[in-house]
Amino acid sequence: MYLAEKHGHLPESLEKRSEITQWVLFGNATLGPGIFIEASRDRAMSQLLPPLNEIFNRQPFLLGNELTVADVAVGSLLAYVPIMLKLDLSEYPAVVDYIKRLSERPAFQKTIGGRG
Image (cartoon, rainbow, N blue to C red):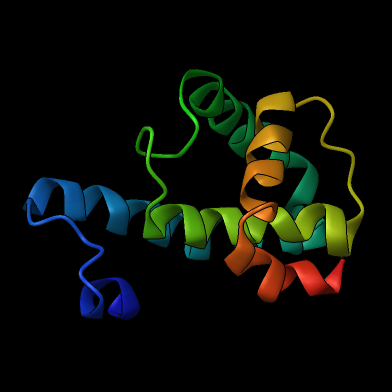
């Protein structure tokens, strides 16, 4: 959020900024622990990935047609699933496509992409 603010990548509208903040918090407080804590993984994935799959069936990024810091927060966590956890996400094809779209970005390749 700091870097997005510093480099002018947050919208001026308080409502839009709040949406982005909501997704960043979701990634850090809900999605990350849900996926990476093995004891809660099955339940969390069955609750969290279907709605995300629906969103990505409608639009390429969390908030529409443009990548935002929300996608960096949520997408980076999702991108670790096939890299670190080797989990099968084929039940969520739109999520798989989203991860692929993010992983093809040059910034991703310079950071997370080198770990796969």
